[in-house]
Image 1 (cartoon, one colour):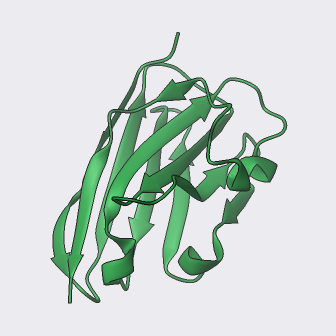
Image 2: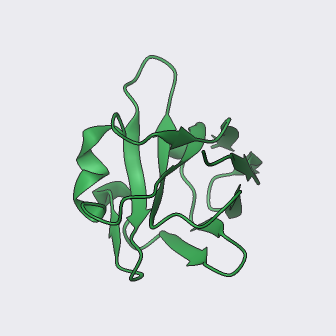
Length: 125
């Protein structure tokens, strides 16, 4: 079993920044961030595999950066230039399987076995 505790959400104005964190109870090879806005399907935002290779949804490229501290078993998402359309509940997800990882960005995370409780991000215009 893996427990995930995500944090760092909040309310910011458009153009602002936030850094999300996800503390895992142990190392997991594949980790990522998903988000779900009211009335919308959950979507993958960014994934990082055990080698540090990453994948981002097009809307996040150039603005968000996913990173992982393997010593602390902690995942991060640095979000810059936030837009109102980034408003959503953000969830950390993890899988002990190392492959496939980045290829699962478009799967809505259905096959990730471990999830955080979510942290709300609200961006006002």
